[in-house]
Each structure stands twice: as C-alpha cells, then as structure tokens.
Amino acid sequence: MTEFVHKPYDKIYVRDMIKLNLDDLIGMMSSLEAANAYWVDGVLFASFAMTESEELAKKEMQNEMFLDKIIFAAYEKYTKTVKSSTNLEIGVLNMQKSKLYKDLIAWLKTQSIWNE
Image (cartoon, rainbow, N blue to C red; front, side):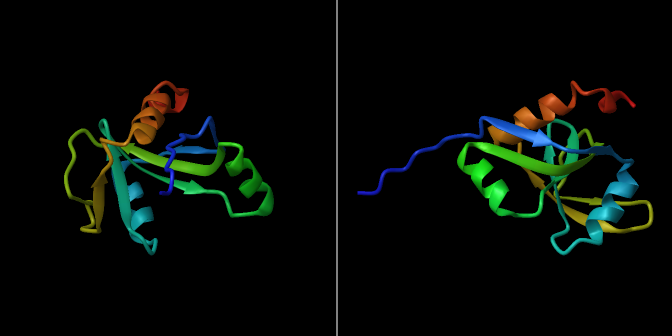
C-alpha cells in the first residue's frame, strides 16, 4: 500500500504584501481567469506564487515556498460572493479550516502593513 505523509512547509517567503480597499481587490480579482478570493479570519485575500523554475522546484523539495505577492483587504464576515460598488462580483472560498492559511493571515495581521 502507498504511504502518505503530510509535511507542511518549513518556511514561506513572501516578496510583497499589498493592502487594497475592497473595491480595488474585487476589480483586480475579476480581471483574472480564476476570479475567486479566499477568506480567513476577517481577511479577503489572494496569493500568487512566483513563476516556476528549476531553482524554485529545488526549494519546494526542501520545504520552502516563495510567494510573489499577497493582496488583501479586511472583510469581516464570510459570504459566498462579494460585490464592488460598481457591481463587479467575485466568488469567495472559505479557507477557515486550512491551518496554512490561518497561520498566513495571523502572521499578516502582525505586519506593519496591516495597520496602514
């Protein structure tokens, strides 16, 4: 039988954090092919991985990940969709049960950009 092992990343590097107002986040997400944002602990967000390369693949094998950016906006209560003031609408995926994303958002809230 195949053995399965769950091994979280040891370290995730975040290159850029961009705090947006809700309308700007919705506008940006609606222009993407997969127009869904994630929601965890009062934050609507999307993360973008860096372009794949052989070097990054080696880092992944060493339990390290590099994110190009995280865009986010405060959004207190989870809803299945969110609509901008100009009626753009995107889907929202509730990732509250993901330990990785809960840890990411907890860390994000400790960064100075959170209070800007």
